[in-house]
Length: 144
Image (cartoon, rainbow, N blue to C red):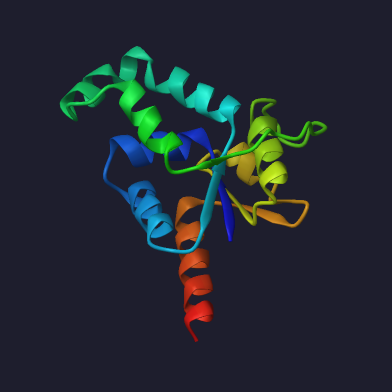
């Protein structure tokens, strides 16, 4: 299975222990291929360098650059496909374009407007919890 994570999911997974971090662990323990793009990594860099995350990153004894490098080491990079306006927020088209280039089965996001799109060329746009369930079910099917 091929998966693309929206930046909001990546930030939550890297900075806090919760369901998004559980998703990253699930991905690492499965046969799932995780994809991103240089544009999404640049967005991650921008978001993690915001003042509102400084204290949290310092508390974790790390830097925003180290978190970006850590995540970049976990993904396969693709060049996003240009897409017509699909999502209510134009920034979300980058996530969709990356998923299309990766031929991803899942786009995982916490962004309600992006979730409202539902599907895109055979790929599903799902929440973190839904992704965990789908990946677990897929792994179960493969093992039987």
